[in-house]
Amino acid sequence: GAVVSQHPSWVICKSGTSVKIECRSLDFQATTMFWYRQFPKQSLMLMATSNEGSKATYEQGVEKDKFLINHASLTLSTLTVTSAHPEDSSFYICSANDQASTDTQYFGPGTRLTVL
Amino acid sequence: QKEVEQNSGPLSVPEGAIASLNCTYSDRGSQSFFWYRQYSGKSPELIMSIYSNGDKEDGRFTAQLNKASQYVSLLIRDSQPSDSATYLCAVNWSTGGFKTIFGAGTRLFVKA
Image 1 (spheres, rainbow over the protein chains, first blue to last red):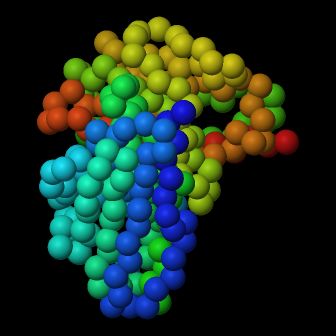
Image 2: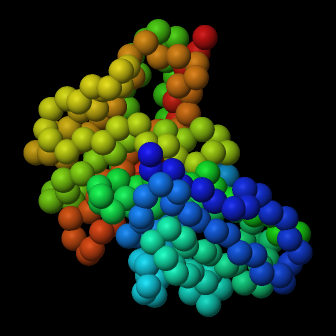
Protein backbone atom coordinates (compact mmCIF):
# COMPACT_ATOMS: atom_id res chain seq x y z
CA GLY A 1 0.00 0.00 0.00
CA ALA A 2 0.82 3.73 0.06
CA VAL A 3 2.00 4.02 -3.53
CA VAL A 4 2.59 7.41 -5.10
CA SER A 5 3.18 7.84 -8.81
CA GLN A 6 4.57 10.74 -10.79
CA HIS A 7 4.33 11.51 -14.45
CA PRO A 8 6.42 12.06 -16.43
CA SER A 9 9.51 10.45 -14.97
CA TRP A 10 11.69 12.72 -17.06
CA VAL A 11 11.13 15.63 -19.40
CA ILE A 12 13.30 17.79 -21.61
CA CYS A 13 11.93 21.11 -22.73
CA LYS A 14 13.02 24.33 -24.36
CA SER A 15 13.56 27.47 -22.36
CA GLY A 16 10.38 29.51 -22.04
CA THR A 17 7.96 26.62 -22.21
CA SER A 18 5.79 25.33 -19.38
CA VAL A 19 5.93 21.83 -17.97
CA LYS A 20 3.26 20.05 -15.94
CA ILE A 21 4.11 17.26 -13.51
CA GLU A 22 1.41 15.03 -12.05
CA CYS A 23 1.49 13.35 -8.67
CA ARG A 24 -1.05 10.66 -7.81
CA SER A 25 -1.70 8.59 -4.73
CA LEU A 26 -2.72 5.23 -6.16
CA ASP A 27 -4.14 3.32 -3.22
CA PHE A 28 -4.96 5.90 -0.60
CA GLN A 29 -6.46 9.33 -0.22
CA ALA A 30 -3.92 12.03 0.43
CA THR A 31 -5.01 14.92 2.61
CA THR A 32 -1.79 16.69 1.87
CA MET A 33 0.77 16.52 -0.89
CA PHE A 34 4.19 18.06 -0.82
CA TRP A 35 6.46 19.19 -3.63
CA TYR A 36 10.22 19.06 -3.27
CA ARG A 37 13.13 19.98 -5.47
CA GLN A 38 16.54 18.41 -5.25
CA PHE A 39 19.68 19.55 -7.03
CA PRO A 40 22.53 17.06 -7.57
CA LYS A 41 24.26 16.04 -4.34
CA GLN A 42 22.06 18.38 -2.31
CA SER A 43 19.31 17.73 0.17
CA LEU A 44 15.57 17.84 -0.43
CA MET A 45 14.15 21.32 -0.52
CA LEU A 46 10.46 21.69 0.27
CA MET A 47 8.82 23.98 -2.27
CA ALA A 48 5.18 23.91 -1.21
CA THR A 49 2.50 22.09 0.72
CA SER A 50 -0.74 21.36 -1.07
CA ASN A 51 -4.08 20.54 0.54
CA GLU A 52 -6.99 19.26 -1.50
CA GLY A 53 -9.34 22.05 -2.55
CA SER A 54 -7.30 24.91 -1.15
CA LYS A 55 -4.40 27.08 -2.20
CA ALA A 56 -0.92 25.73 -1.77
CA THR A 57 1.37 27.08 0.90
CA TYR A 58 4.73 28.02 -0.57
CA GLU A 59 8.03 28.05 1.26
CA GLN A 60 9.98 31.24 1.50
CA GLY A 61 11.81 32.05 -1.69
CA VAL A 62 9.62 29.89 -3.93
CA GLU A 63 7.74 31.91 -6.54
CA LYS A 64 4.09 30.91 -6.54
CA ASP A 65 3.52 32.42 -9.99
CA LYS A 66 6.32 30.35 -11.45
CA PHE A 67 5.50 27.07 -9.75
CA LEU A 68 1.75 26.62 -10.03
CA ILE A 69 0.27 23.92 -7.84
CA ASN A 70 -3.21 22.50 -8.18
CA HIS A 71 -4.64 19.88 -5.84
CA ALA A 72 -8.01 19.15 -7.36
CA SER A 73 -8.75 15.85 -5.66
CA LEU A 74 -7.58 13.65 -2.81
CA THR A 75 -5.50 11.60 -5.23
CA LEU A 76 -4.03 14.15 -7.64
CA SER A 77 -1.80 17.18 -7.38
CA THR A 78 -0.04 18.90 -10.25
CA LEU A 79 2.99 21.17 -10.39
CA THR A 80 3.40 23.40 -13.42
CA VAL A 81 6.74 25.04 -13.99
CA THR A 82 5.89 28.10 -16.06
CA SER A 83 8.32 29.73 -18.47
CA ALA A 84 11.00 27.26 -17.53
CA HIS A 85 14.65 28.27 -17.67
CA PRO A 86 17.83 26.19 -17.45
CA GLU A 87 18.21 27.04 -13.75
CA ASP A 88 14.89 25.25 -13.14
CA SER A 89 16.49 21.98 -14.25
CA SER A 90 16.26 19.73 -11.23
CA PHE A 91 14.75 16.59 -9.75
CA TYR A 92 11.19 17.31 -8.65
CA ILE A 93 9.69 14.92 -6.13
CA CYS A 94 6.21 14.84 -4.69
CA SER A 95 5.10 13.11 -1.53
CA ALA A 96 1.69 12.39 -0.11
CA ASN A 97 0.37 12.03 3.37
CA ASP A 98 -1.85 9.04 4.03
CA GLN A 99 -5.11 10.23 5.53
CA ALA A 100 -5.45 7.05 7.61
CA SER A 101 -1.98 7.51 9.08
CA THR A 102 -1.27 11.19 8.97
CA ASP A 103 2.27 10.98 10.28
CA THR A 104 3.97 9.45 7.31
CA GLN A 105 4.93 10.86 3.93
CA TYR A 106 5.26 8.55 0.95
CA PHE A 107 7.33 9.72 -1.96
CA GLY A 108 6.70 9.49 -5.66
CA PRO A 109 9.55 8.32 -7.91
CA GLY A 110 10.43 11.86 -8.98
CA THR A 111 10.56 13.76 -12.25
CA ARG A 112 13.83 14.84 -13.75
CA LEU A 113 13.40 18.13 -15.60
CA THR A 114 16.01 19.38 -18.04
CA VAL A 115 15.50 22.79 -19.58
CA LEU A 116 17.62 23.50 -22.63
CA GLN B 1 21.19 25.61 14.93
CA LYS B 2 19.85 23.49 12.11
CA GLU B 3 16.44 22.05 12.80
CA VAL B 4 17.39 18.47 11.94
CA GLU B 5 21.07 17.78 11.87
CA GLN B 6 22.96 14.83 10.44
CA ASN B 7 26.60 14.17 9.75
CA SER B 8 26.91 14.40 5.97
CA GLY B 9 29.55 11.68 5.86
CA PRO B 10 30.51 9.81 3.91
CA LEU B 11 30.38 7.00 6.43
CA SER B 12 32.30 4.00 5.18
CA VAL B 13 31.89 0.56 6.74
CA PRO B 14 33.02 -2.90 5.60
CA GLU B 15 30.48 -5.44 4.48
CA GLY B 16 28.99 -7.29 7.43
CA ALA B 17 29.68 -4.51 9.93
CA ILE B 18 27.18 -2.38 11.82
CA ALA B 19 26.52 1.06 10.37
CA SER B 20 25.42 3.69 12.86
CA LEU B 21 23.68 6.81 11.62
CA ASN B 22 22.85 9.67 13.95
CA CYS B 23 20.43 12.58 13.93
CA THR B 24 19.62 15.40 16.34
CA TYR B 25 16.64 17.72 16.19
CA SER B 26 15.78 21.03 17.78
CA ASP B 27 12.00 20.78 18.34
CA ARG B 28 11.53 19.35 21.83
CA GLY B 29 7.82 18.80 21.16
CA SER B 30 8.26 16.51 18.16
CA GLN B 31 6.66 13.10 18.49
CA SER B 32 7.17 11.39 15.11
CA PHE B 33 10.47 10.41 13.57
CA PHE B 34 11.37 8.70 10.33
CA TRP B 35 14.31 7.27 8.47
CA TYR B 36 14.33 7.31 4.68
CA ARG B 37 16.84 5.79 2.29
CA GLN B 38 17.65 7.52 -0.98
CA TYR B 39 19.68 5.92 -3.72
CA SER B 40 21.45 8.20 -6.16
CA GLY B 41 19.02 9.56 -8.73
CA LYS B 42 16.01 8.07 -6.97
CA SER B 43 13.43 9.43 -4.57
CA PRO B 44 13.45 8.65 -0.83
CA GLU B 45 11.85 5.45 0.44
CA LEU B 46 10.64 4.97 3.98
CA ILE B 47 12.65 2.54 6.10
CA MET B 48 11.22 3.03 9.55
CA SER B 49 9.17 5.26 11.74
CA ILE B 50 9.54 5.57 15.52
CA TYR B 51 7.41 7.36 18.06
CA SER B 52 8.44 6.13 21.52
CA ASN B 53 11.70 6.28 23.40
CA GLY B 54 13.82 3.18 23.07
CA ASP B 55 14.58 0.80 20.25
CA LYS B 56 12.48 -0.40 17.36
CA GLU B 57 13.73 -3.26 15.26
CA ASP B 58 12.75 -4.26 11.73
CA GLY B 59 14.94 -6.88 10.15
CA ARG B 60 18.49 -5.61 9.97
CA PHE B 61 17.42 -2.09 10.90
CA THR B 62 17.05 -0.72 14.42
CA ALA B 63 15.87 2.80 15.13
CA GLN B 64 16.67 4.33 18.49
CA LEU B 65 14.94 7.36 19.98
CA ASN B 66 15.83 9.49 22.98
CA LYS B 67 13.47 12.43 23.23
CA ALA B 68 15.17 13.88 26.31
CA SER B 69 18.40 14.16 24.35
CA GLN B 70 16.55 15.00 21.13
CA TYR B 71 18.42 12.27 19.38
CA VAL B 72 17.42 9.55 16.95
CA SER B 73 19.65 6.98 15.35
CA LEU B 74 19.54 4.14 12.85
CA LEU B 75 21.63 1.01 13.12
CA ILE B 76 22.09 -1.26 10.14
CA ARG B 77 23.36 -4.70 11.07
CA ASP B 78 25.23 -6.96 8.67
CA SER B 79 25.66 -4.08 6.24
CA GLN B 80 25.55 -4.98 2.58
CA PRO B 81 26.89 -3.09 -0.45
CA SER B 82 23.27 -2.61 -1.48
CA ASP B 83 22.79 -0.51 1.66
CA SER B 84 25.08 2.13 0.16
CA ALA B 85 22.85 5.18 -0.13
CA THR B 86 22.01 8.47 1.54
CA TYR B 87 19.95 8.12 4.70
CA LEU B 88 17.60 10.93 5.58
CA CYS B 89 16.35 11.60 9.07
CA ALA B 90 12.93 13.26 9.16
CA VAL B 91 11.04 14.78 12.07
CA ASN B 92 7.41 15.90 12.18
CA TRP B 93 7.39 19.35 13.70
CA SER B 94 5.04 19.99 16.60
CA THR B 95 4.25 23.61 15.72
CA GLY B 96 3.17 25.51 12.63
CA GLY B 97 0.85 22.88 11.24
CA PHE B 98 1.75 19.54 9.71
CA LYS B 99 5.34 19.83 8.60
CA THR B 100 8.12 17.33 8.19
CA ILE B 101 11.66 18.59 8.45
CA PHE B 102 14.34 16.55 6.72
CA GLY B 103 17.98 16.42 7.57
CA ALA B 104 20.52 16.86 4.81
CA GLY B 105 21.30 13.14 4.89
CA THR B 106 24.27 10.93 5.64
CA ARG B 107 25.98 9.15 2.77
CA LEU B 108 26.80 5.56 3.60
CA PHE B 109 29.28 3.42 1.68
CA VAL B 110 29.46 -0.29 2.41
CA LYS B 111 32.66 -1.76 1.06
CA ALA B 112 32.58 -5.31 -0.29
